[in-house]
Image (cartoon, rainbow, N blue to C red; front, side, top):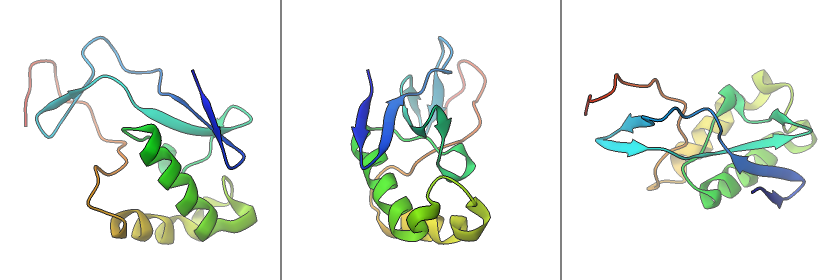
Length: 105
């Protein structure tokens, strides 16, 4: 299931394996990506823990990139990350590495 928001599509991240990801001691088995025309539009292929976080990511993307949102990442990616960090305290978007099965942090 996907959701449209401000011209972008929020859809489930589909590459979690059966073990999921271990993040801050939690097993994460689902997440959401933001796409347009089937391509991830977030800098560094960022994914989000919730649809709400993805919507915030889209709002920030539009604020910092304007009509370049989803392309020319080098021009606005640093500002995107500054804004993401400034909007806390929420679980940040994550594109972290997976720990081995059974590992915990």
